[in-house]
Image 1: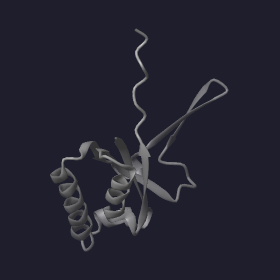
Image 2: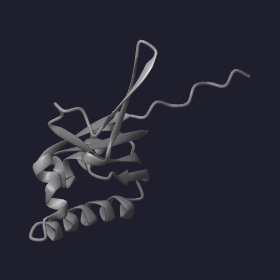
Image 3: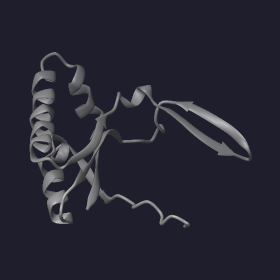
Image 4: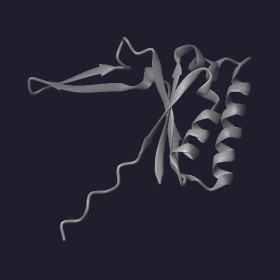
Length: 121
């Protein structure tokens, strides 16, 4: 079964990416985690994301497109990246989520991937 692991981290945790003193530990933990996932063969796809400050948010209200630079102002955690994994059970997906470097400093949401709709044959 396919599950998406969605990684959320605080602004402070995300700032470690660019801090010369903290970046090696931050990236080292993620490299070890991602390497372990790939070695297990469960990874279908996934990507890390640029910082939330690079985001653009789009909404349509009253038929008018509204564009806002960055994430919503009241966002406390930021989406840092995701993986789609193929594992036999939710328990195994939860095990991978618990191993993520952000599990102790943020959180990882786990969701089953929606299968494609049946073809209208």
